[in-house]
Each structure stands twice: as C-alpha cells, then as structure tokens.
Length: 416
Image 1 (cartoon, rainbow, N blue to C red):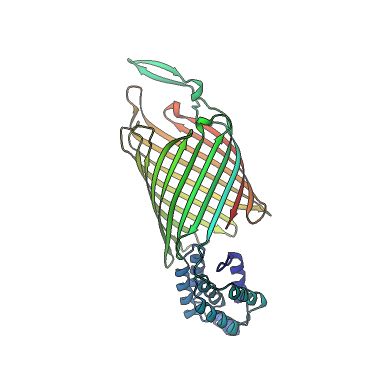
Image 2: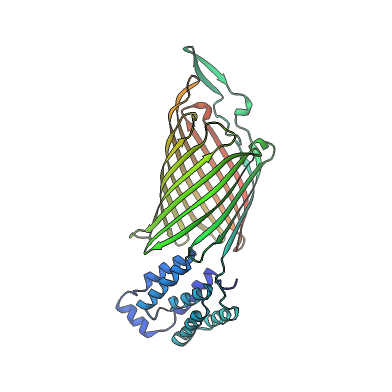
C-alpha cells in the first residue's frame, strides 16, 4: 500500500483541514466564491480516474488562485509522494504543518507517509470476482410458438418444431472475474475479463468469454475523453464460437443543470468473426449517448443508441440496423441493503428476406429486458446479490420469438 491512500481517508483528511479555523480564509469565502474550488473538484475527479499527473497540475493551479485551500495542499502533497517525488512532498508537508496547524489525525497521516517513504510510482490494481447459482427458464432461447406456416407451391404448409427448439429449463453455475491495473500514472488502465457459465445438464449451451484490453483517459477542463481497444473470444458448447476486436472512444461533460448531470457520448466499432459458421462474420458500429444523474446514494442512468451491423458475407437477412433505449436506477433501501432496477429495449431491422424460398419475411426483432436486483453488503469488500431478469423477444417471424425468466443469487468480492 506504499504511496497509496484510500479514497475515504483522503476525503476525511481534506475535510478536516478545510474545517480548520482560518479567519482570513473565512473572510475571503464571504467576500467571493473560492476561485480554486472548481479546480479542486476537477482534481479529485482526476484522482478517481487515475490521472495523477493531470490532478497534480490542477491542484497547483488551485493553490495559486487560493493559497489557503488546505485540501488542495494536502492532496498535492499526497500525490507528489505517490508519484515518487519525495523532496517536493516533504516541502508540501512542512508547509501544511507550519501554515495550517493540522489536527492529530492529519499529523499522523503525514508521519505515516514519511515513514513509508515516497518511492517511485506504484500502479494500483483492482480485482472483482463473482460466483453465482441460477435458474434459467429458457436456456436455448426456444420458440414460444412451435408452429410456423410456409408457402410451398402457392399453398400454405404448417411446420411443427421438434422439442429441442422449444424452451428448455435448467440450472447453472456462474463464475466471473475482472482484473484492472494502472499502466501509466495518468489514466491508462489495462484489464482482463473472464466469464464462464456451466449448465447443470444441457452442456451444449455452456458458454464462456475472455476479453483483454486497455483504456486511456484525458481531461480538458470539464470535458473528459477516453479511448480504448479490446480483443475477445467466446466459446459455446466447449468450442470456439466467436473472435472479436473492439475499438471505442468516449467524451463526457457535466451539464449546467440542477443535480449536475453528466452527458457521455461514445462511438464503438466491433469486428466479429465466427470460425465455425459460414457467412456470419460482421462489423458493427454504435453511437451512444448516456445521461447520468447522481444525488447522494441515488443514481439514474438513461441511454440511447443507434446501431448498424454490416454482414461480410451472405448472412441470412443481410445487413441490419437498430437502436437501443435503456433506463437504470440504483437507490439505498436501508442499512447494507440497496436495489437496482433496469429496463431496456433493443430493436433490429434486417434489409432483406431471411431465407428466400423458405422464410420470405424481412426480419424485425424487438427485445425487451426488465432487470431487478437486491444487494446486501456484508462488509466493504463482500456482498450478496439476488437478481431476476424477464426477457421478451417479440419478432415478426414466429419461430424466433421467445420469452425467458432468469433468477440468480451471487456473491461478489471487490479487492485491491
């Protein structure tokens, strides 16, 4: 943990310094809004995003505009120490001791930082593990309607689906993990994600995925931008099913409105290859807007996206275009219990008939997902999550219509 300060401890320390009786600072605050406060808030945001060098520059500017901003002095000292700049950190610690007469808690923090030493920058890492057990009412996405009518020689003929194409019920075990690690002191992060689901009996529908990538963030005033890429593979039934290359760029800015909402715009390009399927390789593009509002422990996120999926070969239905809407909220219930509720709709419209001569209909797909969960925090790192999902896939081709219900209980661990 050398060179690292927990966010909650940093916040407490900054608040303690800001609360010190400083008559001159109080007089200035009454006369006019503190000019360094905005820079200070931007610096805290940069720290939370791992952009330590950007944060350091912002804190220096905050101190220049408001020399008695005690929180900025403390954050700058801790950052310099975390970046391995021991001499600069020691000068800042001495200034805090002489100028602000810090309380015992701050003195102890400074003493501990000196004892640990300000070695070279140490990258932070984070691990998340999820293990769960669930029940899936429609593992195979079996059709809701077992009958389909086709036109053969100008005469209708009814086809009856066999049992393997109807809804199949099964339990499953889930294991997922994510590892994130700083690659640079200024917001470039590498990550590895893994997820595996194994059914109790229908192993031909087992699936797993592995993704590796990196993401880098920048900030320009109130604007935050990031770009990243990832490589992924997906297996289905124990065999390689898909290879994926993804590129993404995002830009976000807070809006000058009550509750300080943040609007994020993103562009996503994905190249997908299917080694075991002919004519299914495709390239998809997505342009998304995301509005996030947070008030205390309550958060609401609303998203909208337009999508285009271009088939590389003679895929059934050809190219397709779509859009997606989503709404998600999180709120505390009481004590360690919190709840999440989400609703989304995905729409895809194909360009050409799905299978000329057999299915002459141009496919129109509408998928709605309702998700609800309860989370119980056992401690700072462990929690239990009970989640249910209701899925309704309504299409104009009846054999593709399906409904599903999933119930899952999972344990989640977050560690550094």
